[in-house]
Amino acid sequence: MTGIQWRKSSYSQGNGNCVQVGWAKSSFSNSGACVETRRDGDGDILIRDTKLGDASPVLRFTPAEFAAWVKGCAAGEFDLPA
Image (tube, rainbow, N blue to C red):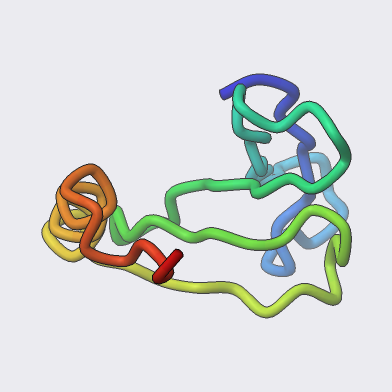
């Protein structure tokens, strides 16, 4: 993943003591049809559609859920019928 876009946390008070969180664009994204990921403070993995930016709905996975989803993708579990 490359191209992290940093954003200040809504909990930052503007006194210089800020927390920034970043979205990382998938390295497989090269056509503008991209996904971005990041981890939240609990370790959950967040995924959003980069075309929609901040307006994108965010999918949230625990690390175990994300691992199961990736395994299912690799196995073709979610492939559409031809």
